[in-house]
Length: 134
Image (tube, one colour):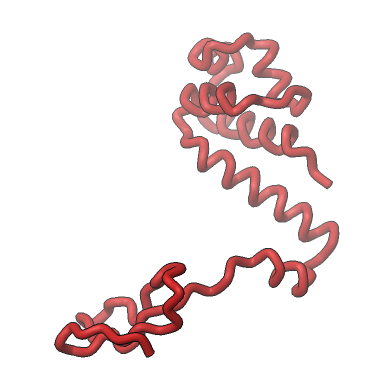
């Protein structure tokens, strides 16, 4: 099982190196000690959300991008370690949202749009704009 702090550190280090920046440059911009940033990058220290935000800002990389990359790395390791188990995947997948049907919009428009959790199973929209629950 991968350690989250190591994956976060690897992604941060990779981002820094791709920019051709040194630990000293990023630590100064993030206002964190060079030693501490080095420990975070090596996965030896857990970065708080505030510290992670500061490092991401110094790298000019959205935190969501870093977290998405970490999530993808963890998923890849988990998938390789246990394989895909459909029953587990189905258990954690979000339920399908109800959709609008009968959409008569412009060519190229999406034929189905999520309705959300309104308790309506299906909505039909007629050409004159009337809406009815099916």
